[in-house]
Image (cartoon, rainbow, N blue to C red; front, side, top):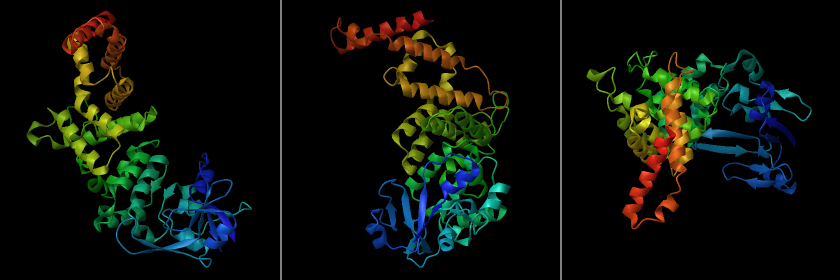
Length: 402
């Protein structure tokens, strides 16, 4: 029995990244031998075990055979006769098909080291085409390894997979899982550029794919193209280390511009509500978590109205805060302002622009939230009077805050 560190841990060590988890492949063993050595079985699809002390994952060397469309359509074969090279051959990219022996020796049968040096994302073999999730993974690696490029032959293969309908077999949960990981990488725009280049984006997120080529008024958007703008917005959110809900909201805030009638272009009157409606459908289709969905819909619906805040009367400003539920949910409100900040600064020449509307809204929210609603309610009779008096007290606080 021989064990090797494989996959991401080896890759990240070679790239100089911090190693989060170590995965091992075991050659020449059986499930019975692993159990006898104290390993604990985990999972049901193929033989994977947890080390009795380190809790690292150890998988028996295995091969895979395609049996149906989608990423679950595989027959797994694990036995002591499966070699390390056969196990590595089933992996997606050459940079992920490098193993490290106990003595530090690298086993690199598919030239992963050369691809790391040339900064290339290249598929290991034609078997890559058997798993559509690999398209998402390549796109995600592009967002993480920002100076790597997809090999031309790999891009051709991914296009062929899209044309063959493999992407159509992806389940919503797996699509969201990969998109969420990609959004949290250093430059999320590269993920969507790769998905768009191979044709997968129009299958996975057609609402987003439609934004490229849609013009916006040049005086407000020097970059003009809506797709380019959205990529700048999400990359700004990433540069500020904003949370996943904020990055998702930044990505989805302008979906409605893809449905603007041609005769109305480059203006997009009413696109905010259309964006919110489209986003609700996307979230339902991909089963997006509630925190991302709620912030995304709020940002899509109200990012335009935020810019009107400096012209609002104090009462209108307070009503807007109530509409945003800013007093009861201050953190979500702050995240909304972050997403709107990304929208403002995700434009050519506006990377450092001031955000006076956000500053004003935050100041007003703080003043309104400081009002002791319980104390006000103690001197009121009935719920209607409480509502009026609390609003009046908060309005006076907003006015005093300037």
